[in-house]
Amino acid sequence: MTREQRLARVFVELADTLVAQFDVIDFLHTLTERCVELLAVDAAGLMLTDQRGQLRVIASSAESARLVEIFELQHSEGPCMDCFHSGQQVVNVGEDEIRARWPGFAAEAADLGFRSAHALPMRLRDEVIGAVNLFTRASRRLDDDDIAVGQAMADVATIGLLQERVGRQKDVLAEQLQMALNSRVLIEQAKGVLAERSRITPAEAFVVMRSYARRQKRTLTSVAAAVVDHTLQAAELGAR
Amino acid sequence: MARRIPRTAQILADLRSPAPDAVVSDLPGSLVTMCAASVPVTGAGIIVMSDAGPGAMLASTDGAAQIMEELQFTLGEGPCVDASTSGRPVLQPDLARTAAQRWPGFTAGALAAGVRAIFAFPLQVGGIRVGVLDLYRDVTGVLNDLELAEALAFADAATSILLQLQSETDGVTGDPGLVAMIEDRAEVHQATGMVSVQAGLALAPSLVLLRAHSYAAERPILDVAREVIGRTLRFDPEDDHHE
Image 1 (cartoon, each protein chain N blue to C red):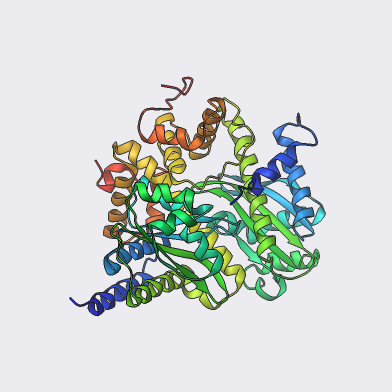
Image 2: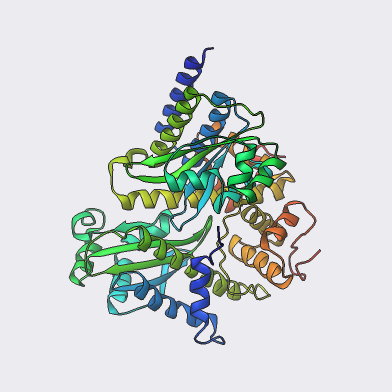
């Protein structure tokens, strides 16, 4: 398949998700996975403003604690913070520049073997609401086409977050953002509940809940809520 | 970048400083007063959740808050009801223009009481829902970015206070210290879920338990959470919550 064909396929998939049984966290998680595939990067994460002055992780291409942490650590410095504050793309930042610009963050990035970092802004009119963060282990540069695809993915993430409410007001943006951030917390709590009940890792619990939600055509958030209030048992989910 | 004291922690410290020995149950009253002074609103109220939905008003600044609570309680509709059931903030900068269709009875009553804009923030941490912070004012208009950030910080502070109050009722032992309970680290929320299964508790007291353990052990809550996830620390029911 050519890149154009793969790209078309991904946009059809994302558009499909936007229609029925939409779940913002599931959508953004899928989007980070597709970023990794389309751009041949090693990790992708999506950060949103918490509207209190910090960025929070809303989705990442893998749920491993080590990877999530590299995104979480950027609440004070890192490519995402710079991108969020400037509203500009931060691309092809190599090892030396990572060390020079964000010394605290650099050690963590090096630990994971990341040698190149990128962040693309999620913009809504004159406002920046978050950023898509990409890392590669090889010191490979993203070319202009890669960056255009990455930015398109960031724009689709913004549309997905706002959904049909995109034309509406600033207060609706705030409502959606806060709701999405709280859904993420709920999903983390549900991962813990299921991990303990089934003796699996939280990352495995995420996969179990997501697969179940897909099979049952339910939203990931509603499945997480049912796990947390014990109306959905581990056995029904198909976990051990 | 210099590390600022998070605004929520600052609010909690300011609430405690005039009377360090004040009991936690006095704090909601101080919080709504401080909130109404810090955010450009006329008044504020905190409503606690009951199992059936929005329950009693815990604290409020003046008469209009009482009127709005009675309206929502009697009619079963309004921004606070929606915020608590949906888990979404409900921001209504111009009640007369946007709210009449959504809540006809409530809107008529609120306008009659002189209220023109309402901002209702659910007090929640994921699946934990403890109440709603209601802000209202006698003029229309949206909260700007700084005002919204301030309102959210007060909502976070109110959530921490309510969690602590609730844990006393639940009989969770140990003083978690009046600190911000809102964590932005995924592992803390995962550990909360695991502890709730181990200890047979709801999520809210489980989060307070983690907090109390971190406070007593003088260790960051993230370290404690990682031990729970790594299964080297368990919180079993009705013991001293250690291995």
